[in-house]
Image (cartoon, rainbow, N blue to C red; front, top):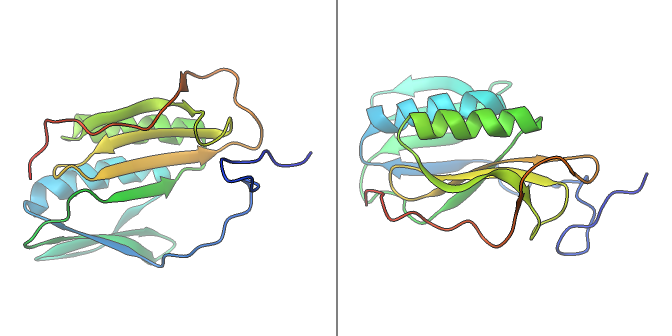
Amino acid sequence: MPASLGMYGQAMTTRLIVVDHVLFVVEDLAASRRLYTAALAPVGFEELYVQEDGVGYGADGLDDFTIAEGSPVTVAAHVAFDASARDAVDAFFEAAIANGATVRGEPGVWTQYSDQYYAAFVNDLHGNNVEAVWHAPGPIADAPRRSGVPQRSHSVRT
């Protein structure tokens, strides 16, 4: 079965990794660590190392995402984590909200991107757009459909 086309007319099943790792600077390392450790577990990321001023996360021993305490903090960034299934996206969203994130876009099929794009978006403690996304192998018919672009909440610290 051929892959569905995304918003740019390209197949959604073939991915090229273009970013090796991402670092966010945070104000409160303990609070950010609670948020990211809980939210990233459902997408397969774990704490790989903990230092006095930072925490590295990843899977298979590869530190793909790091938070580091410092100034100025990272604001208005967007990072999307690949999820293995729809349930992982839902669990990411619930864990993030339970640990201080605010809602940016509830779990569902974000039709602007494709009918195979199941994602959830949260704002971290500094208003960064943090997403978990599952690229389904075919169109998703049994999930809430979302349109437009997830919007930033106004209840974040900067």
